[in-house]
Image (cartoon, rainbow over all chains, first blue to last red; front, side, top):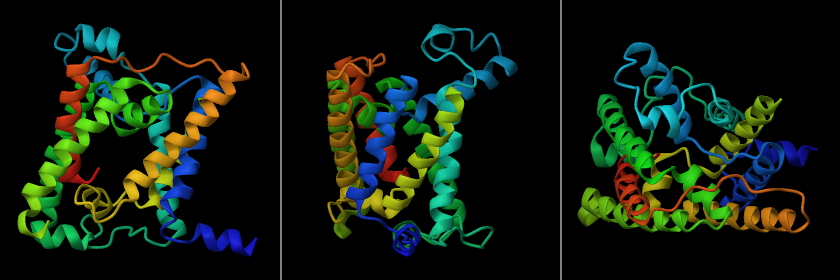
Amino acid sequence: MNWIKQQISKELWSPYVAGILLGIVGILAVWLSNSLLGASGAFENIAGMIGKAVAPAAFNNTYFNYVMPPGITWGVILLVGVFFGGMLGAATSKTLKWGKKDAANSDSQWKRIFGKQTWKRWVLGFFGAILLEYAAGIAGGCTSGLAISGGMLLVPAAFLFIAGMFASGILTALIVYRKRY
Amino acid sequence: MNYVISGFLGLFFGFALNKAGLTKYNKIVNQFRFTDMAVLKFMMTALVVAMIGLYGLRGLGLVKFPAVPSTYIVGNLIGGLIFGIGMALTGY
């Protein structure tokens, strides 16, 4: 029992152990509710809901009517769970920095590369996230929804996506880090 | 009922991501610099475990696969390419 407590309060697990946990979650998602894990789709569901309420004409298109129908879907609830799960993980290892001054930008490597200001992190996070969500919309899923969920069903799309993701990810890191790469 | 399952699975999903360190910028970007292989180890372990489990369960006739993400080569590739830029910048 003590050993379990000790393991749970560790900040970092071996990625293999965490990976096994995610694998089991992936199996259970298909087994228990015939759904796939995913994150980006849920944001589109929520965006569709807001859009339909604010500007129904602009959102009355094929994409939001049929491809990604708005509503509180299985994925939206999953996303809420992910949020609290991540928080729980941080709380158990006492790395949850609630309201601390640099809690929004506490990554020392990020500060070394981009500077200390927190607003820079927010701006980069905002525009980077637009890229992420847009790309996930084109590809039909994100890292969890397409790469992991698709990969475990051996869907070719997943492996194409992973290839593309790594190709441009490596290139972007190379440009950002240049000599420090 | 389905929503309760979903919430619980999400909880474990988030927990696993946090414990693997994938909620941190440096873990994600260092994967692309090949100085920290945690992302690949995590993803590939999850994939292998889930593949074995799912195909095993399907072999036993216990599960039916849901509609799989569709493959359209250009879209998947271009999406992946743009996604990689965002991922390396934000550390999502």
